[in-house]
Image (tube, rainbow, N blue to C red; front, side, top):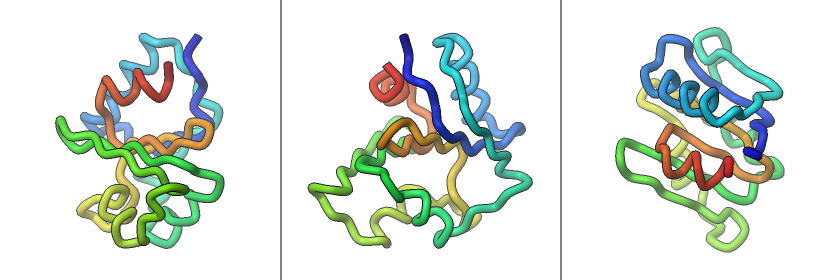
Length: 116
């Protein structure tokens, strides 16, 4: 059984968000809380605040997936923001909190690994 998503940030008109949504629906993944990115903008300060209780970031950009272990790697804020903030200066969508993991962007293999 797939894990549920505790918190999801997405845009309804976003192509990548639609791919992630299709994956979640097919996998039967439940979402506990959804925030619509078009209505609620999360800048760098708010994005860093999301990391409270997060141990890992899995960020996908195109075919590239990068994983940061916040406990072992101890990356600085600039490194983290480079992965999670988009060209608009806001949190990238889709972004999902799954337990102690922040899943940013969409890559099918990354979703399969994190969500089970």
